[in-house]
View 1 (cartoon, rainbow, N blue to C red):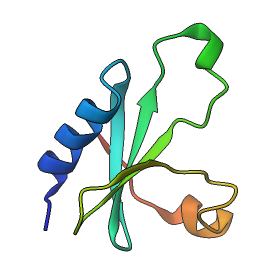
View 2 (spheres, helix red, strand yellow):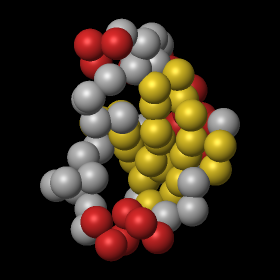
View 3 (cartoon, rainbow, N blue to C red):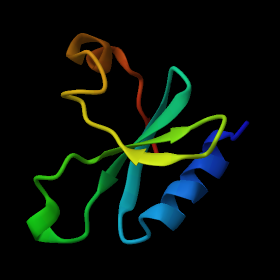
View 4 (cartoon, one colour):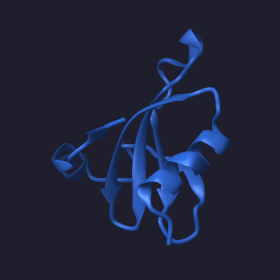
Length: 79
């Protein structure tokens, strides 16, 4: 099982250009909010998930991967 620091390191390897701004646990994942470095990417979804068990890193959409009301209840930790 990966902890938050290890998950953050995996995300940095997956997307080294992005700046990680915040994180929160959610179900079997850590969710991360990132800042994209390219101004043309500013409208991209700024969220990624890292599976706590496998370490798989994946883009996370607040429109399709979570109920919006649940998303609003998450407690984000600044990095």
